[in-house]
Image 1 (cartoon, rainbow, N blue to C red):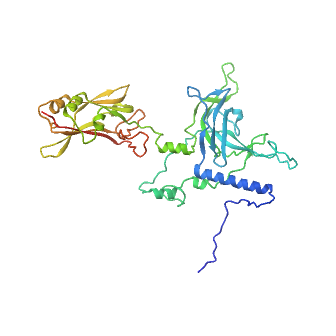
Image 2: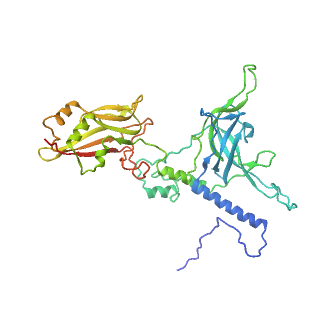
Length: 437
C-alpha cells in the first residue's frame, strides 16, 4: 500500500550548473562561489570549531613581558578560525591602541584582545572594463578589539550526573545531538550543535576606508588577556589627563580557545603534553637482562647486596614521597611446607643527587642485622635459593610538578604508545641461586 504523504524536502546547498557554450553571468559565478564559501564555513565549524590554529602569540622579551615598541605590542603571524566567518590570517606586526576598532578602553584594567574577520567590498563601477585592486576584488583582513575583563576558557570535561552510567556509545550519541533536549540523567548536548547553524550578523563599517567587521561581543577570537595602564607622568603635573596604553603583563593561554590541528592531535595522542617521571635505570639491570630462568650466583648476590640497590629517575622526585611504603624490596623463599612466602627486606634509604627537597635517585641499603642473619650468617632462609622483587609504587611518588610516576618497564621505549602506566607499580624481579658451601 502506498501513501500520498511526501517528506518535505529543503536544499541546504544550491549551485549553478554550467553547460558547454553557455554565457555565464556574474550572478551565476558569484552564486557558485558563495555556496562554496558557505560549505567551507560549515565544515570548519563542524570539524574544527573556532579558535587559534597556530601562531598569533604576543611577542615577549627575555624577561617574559610584552615587547612594547612605541607603546605597540607585537603579534606573531598565524591563523585563526572565526566563530562565524571564514578563517583569519595575520602575517604578524604591531598593534597600538589607535589601531583598535570598536569602543576604546575607558579606564585602566584587564581586557581581552580579540581578533575579528574584516572585509572590504569592491568598488561598484560597471563602466570600468579593467580590474584593479579595488574595482573587482573582495578583500579580506583582520581587525582587533578590546573587551573589558578576561575570562578563562573552560576546557574541562562535561559533568556526568551523579549515579549516571554513561557509556561510550551513549556519550557520543548525546554530545553529537542524536538525542536532543534536556535530560538530567545523562550528559548535556554539546553547545556547538546549535551554534553550527547560526548565521553571521551584518558587517558594520569601521571608518572611512570602506573596511567593515562584525561588532557583536561574542564574535571574534580571543588572543590574550592584556593590561591597560595609565602611562601619564604626574610628577610635573598631578592633574594631567590619563594616558592609557599597554602594560607589560599579559596572559595568552588562559583566554584563547585552541583548534587542534592534526600534527597537534598526534602529539597529544602520543602523550607529549604531560611528561611524567619514570624509572631511568636500576643498578641490577644486568641481572634482569639475563632472563628469569637465570639464577644469580650466590657469591655475586652477596657481594652486591651489601652495597645496596640503586634506582634513578628521569626527573627529580620529592624526597618526602620516598619512604618504606613507596619503595621496598621483598625476598621470596620456600618455607618448611614448601610454600613460597614473601618477606620485606628492612632497608635504609640513601639519597642520590639530592638538591634541596628533591632527589634524582635512591639507594636501598639492607639493614645490618638483616645482612648478618640472611647473607653473612651461618643459617639463612635464602641459602636454598630465593627470588627478589623490587617495587616502586608510582601512585605515591611525586615529582617537582606534583605528578606521579609512569611505571612502564625499562624495556619499553618512552615514546611507545599503549604502555603508559601512570601511578602503577614498577616491579623488577630476579632469582638467586643456592649457596654453595
